[in-house]
Length: 259
Image 1 (cartoon, helix red, strand yellow):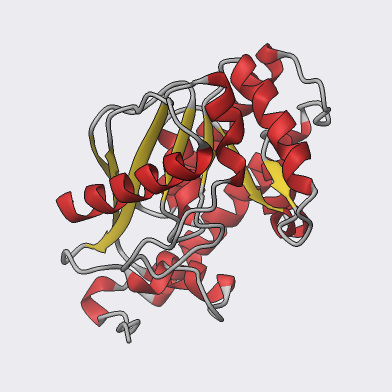
Image 2 (cartoon, rainbow, N blue to C red; image 1 turned 60 degrees about the horizontal axis):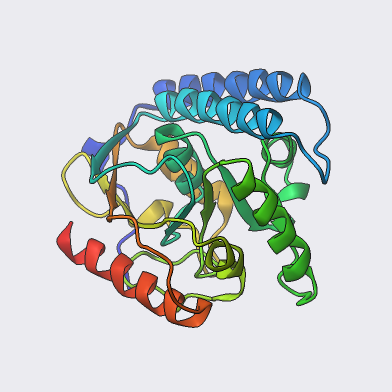
């Protein structure tokens, strides 16, 4: 069991907590207005439109991380095209990776219904998949193929859900098929979070029966959070999707040990 109690010396005052909440709310509303200027997503998006959506999300992510006082440490080369796969720990993961490079994400369909976050994700090019509907994989794979053809970096969390970050769950191979077919470069990454004291920031891990609001509150309450991203070298796709999933899983685990 992980300790989710936040030490007093690592927490902001009640006044600063309130101010951070206010600044974050204003930033979210501003972000909502910014994406509102973008057109509604369509099936056959032009390449420059996809790139614009990814660029807008990057600006939003950088602003939100600044308000949340999340700093980023990276190792390895940040990819700019192809497919990026990573372990999935927190709702912060999307902001973190987007802040480093313009990209679009594949996300569970439930996110589209979240207040404020849903419209921002939708307008910034996120591809929503219904995980309870196997036939939806084909639709998403078609969208991935178009995104790859537009030379947009796409991020996928093959675990299919977030975890506590202590281990990497098995990778689901179905959404890797478009990258296999296009023989695109595929890059693995490992994400982790630390407190100012260097301890694992377990309380922001969004998994199991944890409440998103509680995870967000823990992040806002902390004085500083450091996100660590370790990128591997791009892989050449010369195999089937199941073998690729296994190789990527092993690489993400290796990157986590190397952190």
